[in-house]
Length: 503
Ligand code: BES
Ligand code: MN
Ligand code: ZN
Image: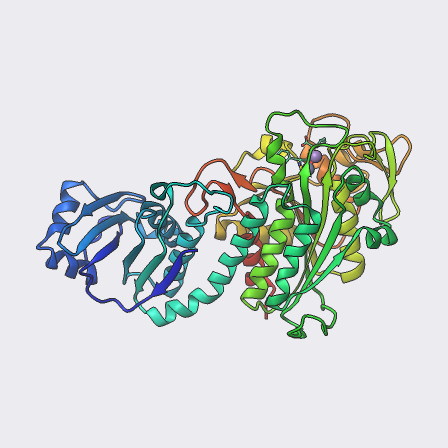
C-alpha cells in the first residue's frame, strides 16, 4: 500500500520531485526556488520540451543535480478542468509515472486541503496492486512506489481532510481484493468470513447459513445455490453512525432508525447453471459477486470514516453451477415474498438472489431507501458500454442524487426506463404457470426486463437498482483505476450518503 504523508513546503534538493504546473502558469514558490537552485534548468526544460502545462502532459529531467534523481513536470490543464476531479487524476498520473521510484515529493503549494487529499486519494487508488498469487515476479517488473510526500498550502489542514478520504480508499481496496479473488478461493462461506472482518470497525455482522435461509423461506436464492457443492450465505451488516449505538464488541447494538440500505448480488461464480454459458470468457464470471463486494467495501468506508448515518448492507452469496442437484429450466420456486417464480433460464440467477434479499431488507429494516448493485445483465454493456452503470429507479429525487454523486466522483450512472407493475416491459414477465417468470420474451431490452423483475419484490418505497456489469472491472488502466476490479459504486454511494444523509 502506498504511504501518503503531508509536509510543510521546504526546498527540495534530493530524491524525486514532482512539479505540477497549470496551463500557461509560471513557476512559483518551491518550484521557482528549485529552478533557481538548478540555475534555470526547469525553465530550460519547459521550453525545450514545449511543455505548456496542458492536461496529462509530462516532462522528465533526469539527474539535474548530483543529489536530485529526477524532476517530473506534469501538466494539470486549465483551472476549471482541474477543479473537477483534476487533483485526483493528477495523483493517479503521478503514481503511474513514478511506479519504478520508491519515494517522491510533490510540490503542491497551489493546492488547498481538499485538493491535496484528492491528490492523495488518486495516487493511492492508482497504486493498488493484487500480487498475492505471484511468486516469480522479477524485481524490475514490480512497482516500487512506497511513499509519496505532498507539500500543500497547509499541511495540517490537508492531513485532516485526508482522514475520511483514506477510509474510503480502504473501502475501495477491500472491494477490489474481494472482487479479484478467484472463485476457488472466494466462495460464499469464505466471502462471509471476510465480511466479518468489518466487526473491528464497529459494524454488526450477522451471517445466515443454509439452514437459516431455508427456515426463512428464501426459495429463490436457494434455487440458485442448490446445484453447487458450496453452501449459500447471506450477510447483514449494520453501521449505526447516526443512532450512535455501536458497541465496541459489535453486539449490544440497537435497531437502526430509518436506515439507508444497500443490497449486493454475490454470485461467487456464474456458470449459468443448466442454461450453461459458452466456454469463451466464462472466467469473467468470477467477478459476478462485484455488487456484494462493493456493498462490503462501502460499509467499510462508512464505518471507517465514522459516517453519521444508519446504514445497512445485505449481500446474497451463492455459486451458480450445473449438476445433478441443479435447478432445471421450467422449475417453479417460491420466493421469500411468497410470489412464485417460473425459472425459464437458470442463467438469469442474480435477480433470483436479489428478489429474496431485497424483500427481506425492506421487511426487516423499513429503509429510507434501498439501492442494489449487481452485475446483472450482459445487455447493459451492449447499451451503455463501459462508461456508465445503468440506473433504474422508482424515485426521481433518488435518481437525481445518484446522478449528481456520479458526476462528482466520476462513477457515472445513466438512467434507464422502469415502468410501473403491469405496464410495458413488466408485461413480458407474465408466466404461464407461476406469478412471474425470470426472463422476458426475447433478448430485447434485457436490462430493463431484469430491473422490472426486481421491482416485483420492491414495495414501492424509494429504490434504485444499479446494473454494474459493464463497470465492475476494467480491461485497461484508467486515471485512478488500474486494470482489474474497479470497486465501482463504493465512492459513488459514499458520496451520496455524505452529500444527503448525514447529520
Ligand atoms: N452475470 C450475468 C451478467 C453478466 C454478463 C455480467 C456479462 C457481466 C458480463 C448474469 O447472471 C446473466 O447471465 N445474465 C443473462 C441474463 C439472460 C439469461 C436473460 C445475460 O445477460 O445474458
Ligand atoms: Mn447468469
Ligand atoms: Zn450472474
